[in-house]
Image 1 (cartoon, rainbow, N blue to C red):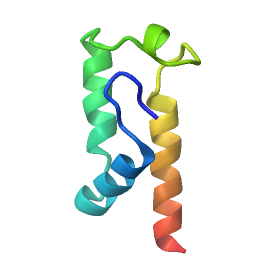
Image 2 (tube, rainbow, N blue to C red; image 1 turned 135 degrees about the horizontal axis):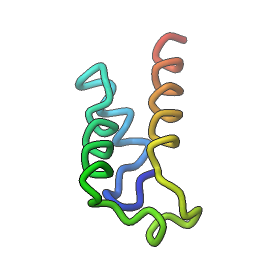
Image 3 (cartoon, rainbow, N blue to C red; image 1 turned 180 degrees about the horizontal axis):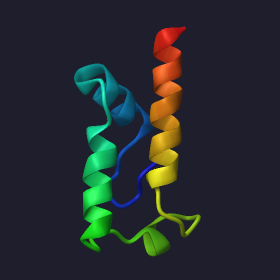
Length: 66
């Protein structure tokens, strides 16, 4: 999901179970703000991964309710 910091869906699921919020999203958001990401180079889509992180986190929340 995140090519700059190698976060996977499993990482986001574990983050949710452990913290009941997205520390990964906060970490990536801070690093993006500091200019410490390379999405345009590392991500095959050339786009920032924050949207995918949010979508995955929301999906994990829904799955935990079901």
